[in-house]
Amino acid sequence: MELKGKAVVVTGGAMGIGLATSKRLVREGCAVTIWDLNASALEDAKRELEVLRGRVFTHACDVTDKTRVYELAKTAASEMGQVDILINNAGYVMGGDFLEQPDEVWEKTIAVNLTSMIYTIRAFLPAMYERNSGCVVNISSASATLGVPSLSMYAATKWAVWGLTESMRFEAWERGKRGVQWSSIHPSYIARGMFEGARLGFPGNLIAPLLKDHDVIAEAIVESALKRGNYSPKRPWTVNLIPRLRLLPDAWFQALVVLLGVTGSMKNWVGRGKERS
Image (tube, rainbow, N blue to C red; front, side, top):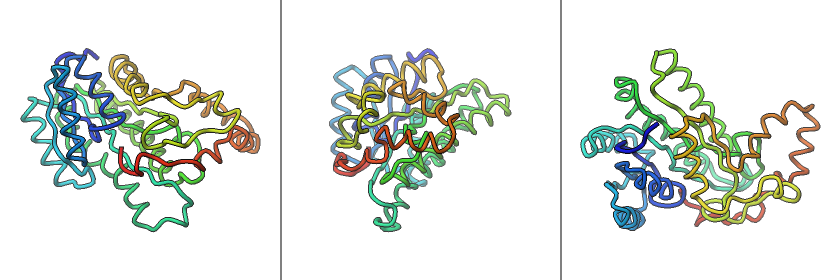
């Protein structure tokens, strides 16, 4: 996809992966609309992006509020002319044992990480179908490829995001809308931000080391998913090995997960204030 002149909406775009991606998009010549809950972070993000001479719009948005999402979708189309690319980046993580968190935490995890994508996709997809042109990028996770203790509900939502993305790709094909592109992105642990403190044990960290910063994922979104149309970029690339390792006998695969330190990877998690991305 040629990005110059494209109009993009990025959810959770004021910090982390969302902001790093927005910077790359502005440099590519895109108009960018950022939605985020954090009003002060939105102001800071707008200033940073305008320094890059970007055409930038910012709006406070709780993506779990479908009325607000549908309202701002119309605003984005009005301000930018149309929306060519949707990047569903808003996310929430709360680690811990499944039984130790109240229902409200798990309900919030599902609402932010999965249900919100139903609203945003439904808001922008009809116009993309009408033009038979556009792209939806959904941020999934390396945890969509295997189970992680103390991350059960987060992993469940990210497995769902991968399934949603693949299903929608084939649904678009069945509609004859192959011009609408779908990608899911699968980051492993990033050294800073939502997953600060989390890491694989030895030897897992040698095979899948911590990602140094959010721009590693921004690069995957812009260069791999958008420009080259790759369906499910994974970072580091070794995350691609996990689905292939499932060809092993079940007991061997489970033992390997333990050996790589996956099961203890959240023990030292502190996160970025345990808030949304």
